[in-house]
Every structure is written in structure tokens, then in C-alpha cells.
Image (cartoon, rainbow, N blue to C red):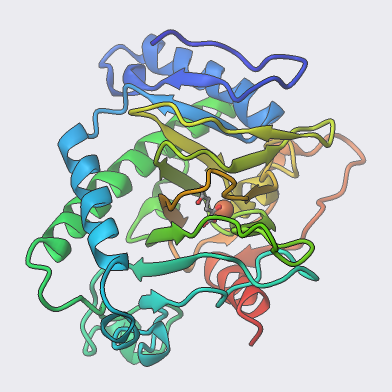
Length: 324
Ligand SMILES: O=C(O)CCC(=O)C(=O)O
Ligand SMILES: [Fe+2]
């Protein structure tokens, strides 16, 4: 698929082929960096194509996700993330409110992260969101598929962070410490159809920005994801088969003093049928301190945010959106 830059009238998200990031020729990697620069600056969102993630792995993730959400309520409840010390497992319908002042989100989910045993030093130290996963019984392929997919997403996230470093005129490995042993969350989501008599303001996922570094989203063909353009209008992120929708999270807007955008987005499932999506959050190393990059401050300009660690920001945002 060809590369295309962001339309000035904000008609849609740009489509970016990232194959060049895997090229040996540095000029080709740089070229993708230049394309990423425009997309990150203008929209903070793009479709990522030519990513090299096998189609059968993607199909298997959707298949396992559908099977999981079709399980009886009791089987899902047995894996409620309240039973986990690290927010892993099943998130019931209306558990999260991403947009303050609106009804809780009409979605259910399942959270998976890097597998760490209870004796792992990070877990013993009580670090946020670190520990063992909860896995469904009687779904023999689930764990292997999700772990294989998480590994592929972690690698793609790291590759994209190298591209983003280039896009900012930084050394390609500038974000290496951020990408080292990252917190990541694979989130399976299921949205029932939006009911005709939904309360005012009801959404599948209320308007929010993502908390970490990068989000790599798979969506089925239902539609419903909307992205807020710089002019304030909501754009449909119409599904493109075989693509990921990639967006920048808060860590990148903080690093760049908002030169790159962590953009508001939301989901309203008006398709009349079930919607399935799979965001993967490449949140970054929990100890990474994120503060305005020197190259992103004009003379006399002040940083918009104080320095924060990835872990502290994540903890704050979980507390806020889960009403703790
Ligand atoms: O389901 C989607 O398309 C988006 C989900 C999302 O924005 C999120 O989980 O942060
Ligand atoms: Fe999101």
C-alpha cells in the first residue's frame, strides 16, 4: 500500500507503510521517520500497514477472543481482575469510565500482560501491574496465541519507537531504555451493540487519551472508533483489513511538549452487532522518567507537564478511570 500524508482537511487518518523500518538501508528507515513525523504531529493516529505480523496469528487472536467472551458469565467472573494483584483477567461490562461525567463504558474486556511469577523481584516489590496472568480453563490454545501475539506486538512497538526517534531527529535507539522490559497490556475488548434507549452520553469507550507510549489496535469490521481531529470534529477510523490503528499515548505528548499528539478517541458501536477489538498498549519501562525533550522546547517555552515515571502516570490513570 502506498504512503500518504495527513489530509489538511482532516478527512481521515494517514496510512503508513512501515516496511522501510526493517530495511538495512538507513535512508529507507529515515524516509519512514519523515512520514511518521507528519502523522504524529498532525493527528497522533495512523493506520500501520506492511507490518509483517502474520494474518493467521491475527485471525487466531480474534477467534480466541470471541470464544472467551461467549463463555458463561460464571466462567468469566471466575477470572475477574479483582482477583488479581496486577489487574489481569476479566473486566465486566461497565467496569471502567474513560470519560468523566458519562455513564460507564459499554464494553467488557480481558487484560493480559508479561507473565511474572510471584517470586519475581518486581512482583515482590509490589510494582504496579506486574505479576501472573489469569488464564481461562478449557481454552487450550488461548494462552499460547496471546503470548505469541504479545511478543509480536512488543517487537512491532519497539520498531515503531525507533521510527519515532528518527522522526524527531534523535538517535534511532533513543528510546531503548523505554523499550527495555516494558509494561505492556494486551486488552481483548467486546462491545455489545449500542442500545436504542441508551442513557445520554453512553459510549462503548468514552473519550480518552491512552496512557503509555504507543497503542497498536486491531479492530474487526464493525467500525465505531472515532478520533478527534485538530479542528474538534470526530473522524471515523474506518476499519482497513490487515492494518493496525496506531496512536500515541500520553508519554509521547509529554516527551514532545505536545508537538506530537496523544489524541482523544472514543468508541460508539452503532453497527447493530457485536464489536471486537484488541488494543495492545506498549506502555514502556515503568522506571522511565518522561520529561520534555530539550529539542522540543522553543526559547522561552515552558514544559506543559512536570517529569513523571511511566509507572506513576499509569497508576494515576487506572485510579481515575476505575474510580478507585
Ligand atoms: O476498541 C477500540 O477500538 C479502542 C479501545 C481503546 O481506545 C482503548 O482500549 O484504549
Ligand atoms: Fe484508547
